[in-house]
Image 1 (tube, rainbow, N blue to C red):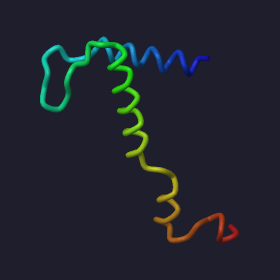
Image 2: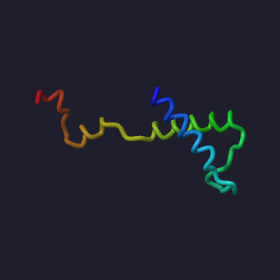
Image 3: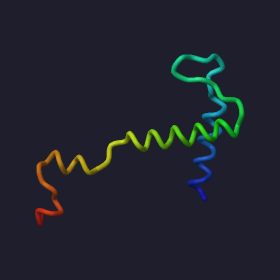
Length: 69
């Protein structure tokens, strides 16, 4: 329950804090349904670009779980 409340409040806050003047990087979306659609896509893109924990194992040169440590 708390997670969904935070997700909605963050989306509302982002909607209300949009720039009034459009720029080349970002533009304002005033239709709430359209904003919600674009907002979900942006979150998905951020998650997609986020680094995972898997490369941390590759940096060490071995996988701790396979090495039997």
